[in-house]
Amino acid sequence: MKAYQNYLVESLGIGCLKPRGWLARELKLQMEGITGELDENWGSINRFSDWLGGTNIGWERPPYWLDGLVPLAWLLGDEKRIEKARSWMEWTLNSQRENGDFGPHYWTQEFDDTLFWPKFVMLKALVSYYEAENNPKVLEFMSRYYRFCDTLLDTYHMSGWDEARAGDFAWSVCWLYEKTHEEFLTGLLDKINSQSLNWTECLENCPFTHPTAYYYNWKELTDKSSRSGWYTIMKYHATHIVNVTMGLKQPVMAYKAGGEKKYLDALYAGMKSYMKYHGQVTGVYSGDEHLSGPNPTQGTELCSVVEFLFSLNAIFQQTGDARFMDLLERIAYNALPGTITEDFTGHQYDQQANQVKVSMESRNWYNNGDRANLFGFEPNFGCCLANMHQGWPKLIRNAFFMNGQEELVFGAYMPVSALWQREDGDIRITEETEYPFRDTVTIAFEMDEPREFTCRIRIPGWCSSARIEYNGEVIGSEAEDGYVSLHRVFENGSRIVLHFPMEITLKTGWYHNGMSVERGPLVYALNIKERWEKLGQGHPKFPDCEIYPESRWNYALDTSVPMEAVLSECLSEQPFSKENPPVRILAAGRPVESWQMENNSAGDLPESPVALDAAPETVELVPYACTKLRISLFPWL
Ligand SMILES: [Zn+2]
Image (cartoon, helix red, strand yellow):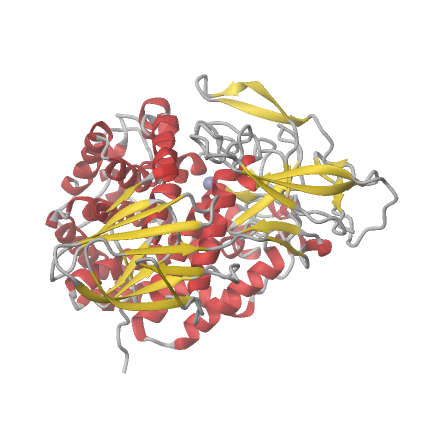
């Protein structure tokens, strides 16, 4: 007997959350940097857009942007941007046709994967819009659209982009089902799952244990065959990095439809394999368009970073497994800010874990162009410029999760305030912290009357000596499956103080037995002196930039000398700062003269341990995201 599986725990919605501290400053920088006026600076999203009834074809780009702008505007309470976002969302709601379909009207004349799939993104934006304002019109709209799809999928069969990204379609269908319990939605979910690219199989057997280049030579393929030919030959969609990180949620959607454990088993096995064969120190997988192996000079596309974070939210809601929040923090606090400028006006298409030069030159990408690692407005292709906006604002949906009225789950730690709306009245929660830069988190409750419930306190996997205080009293901190459960009658003023001492940890076993340096959720990188040069190209307001190294980068870490962490006095306005990093780690490094630049990247990482005679020097490591040139996977001795 098939039974639909509700999420185990549910995110608090955008409307119930407010960023605080450094996170509020980061979101504000994002809004003022690029997100708030993107429509005035980019032809793909301007006022003549087809997503506003005009003739300018915006395709997936306006929905992508709105998927970030909507939560961002409401989280900041930014009235001007709320009005802007609202005008786009209301156009979409009003675009619904008699048959239930919606969107730019020319899409009724032709129908294919590239036209169908952007609607999956707009449906995600609509979920945020609903969370922000509780407007019942959104639920009615989605229900009507899904009735249209329920009929459509009897004759139209997904293929290509919509097939690869069907997990995101299913995601919004499940979201609606858990709100309205309309029975036809489970039937639609089955249809979507049966037409989806079989990510369960991809994850279970991981057919790609080498970089894509090992299997398929891009140049030969594209010389010899047509687009549809190479799409099929090289299993284009199954190796495409953004599809891969989006596809991680698809087995969860298959699990939701009937509760078969095999789907979650495949997900666990697959994530382990992808990490083993394509993993980077920040927790992401490489993909300079397609899965590219564990070499730290391969690229990781920004779209795949924000999509990974979004998939992890869905995976966590279904499993409640604390390890997914460890991974989410690792990606969000390293890979995400590491590929965007501090003022949020420039980003890369591809970031490298070992990135010693940023320039318009060829690299060992699978099939990305020479502009892919520039910091700029639209380097390589415009998808990341459209899609990057969801990263920070949606992260906040991972701060707290609820399990009915019974449990409040502490997810990823960040400074935030939240409103837990319960049948017996609201509870206001304030999380005060400078995590991930500092190790203390204080969570305070405000409520009218005492309430009995359980706090499931996540103990980060890297933390071996957590300390928990409840109203000043130290309580047991022995974690079970990543959590300490605290069942109490909480009252107004109740406080939980968490200490997660951050030790410097050295991890080996990466590519060529390289070493990563970690402290808490942050990965540390060599602080290379950077010379930024503006290129006379890109957007006049947001020019493309190259970065050249002005200091030595080819060091091996000498592990016989203990490392020391030095904390700054206070956090700077922008904590992911090269000038004022929140933490510096002083280490001993020895130059590796044989390790030089090759094809504009650091040459192949020397196999460790290395034998070196060079004298040790003190080198400074700072959080990965404070650097734009870096070594974060080191040879060592
Ligand atoms: Zn992209």
